Amino acid sequence: MFAATLTKYSRSLPIFTRKNSQYVSTTETNGTREITLNHEKTKNSLSLDMMSDLTEAINRNKDDITLRAIVLSAKGNVFSAGHNLKELQSSTGLEQHKLVFQKATELMKSIIQSPVPVIAKVNGFATAAGCQLVATCDMIVCSDTSKFSTPGANFGIFCSTPGIAIGRCMPKSRATYMLFTGEPITAREAYESGLVTKLVPADQLDREVNEIVEKIKLKSRRVITLGKQFFYKQIDLDLLEAYKLGEDTMVQNINIDDGQEGIRSFVEKRNANWSHK
Image (cartoon, rainbow, N blue to C red; front, side):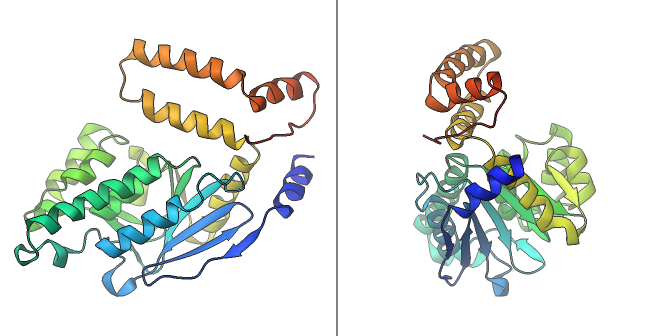
């Protein structure tokens, strides 16, 4: 019955193919927006233009209730090599250097503040700010041949901002190993360290991500949005403050339309009919 309901719902949604930019390509199908880093000649580096295009693609029509999940992927064997170092040479000036990192922060915030889950689909090497981009996503699914690194210290630029992201999803000793040595870790090591959500063979990567997205689509968008907002607010609070915020959020959740619909559907032993509002 769930499958039938999902199929019926998916068919009611629009299907779009977005026009490609120079740096990213975007497709939107049945509520899933896949944004692909598409600039192989720079190893998908996070140039100012790339970051602007990614941020725009993540934020586009984000309050449209037909949007249910965002997938970030990349073309080629490098997911992203991090910042474009040509933009960080002394000749480009201090103001541009500030702009680069402001743009990076804006991009990371767009992922955290997206009302729908953002899933990184990694089949390649994610390094430096590219690793930061991946680690900032809500979930990370990678192939068994992927690698991750924060090698900035090797080039005289410590990966401070990437360390913010990996330090919040990995144990301290694993994160500091990556930051202080610059050595890459394997997909298996990333999974065992908590950086990666799911680890699968490359030929199963698309299927695994699709299965996760379809499970998300069975839920109320409004409930998922509320839960995501709460999760990122509470994570930096002390325990008692987090519980107080949790109490307030639970009461709010119960009293929205989809909260009551969920309770009714459970009591009546039927599938929920979500409004997503």
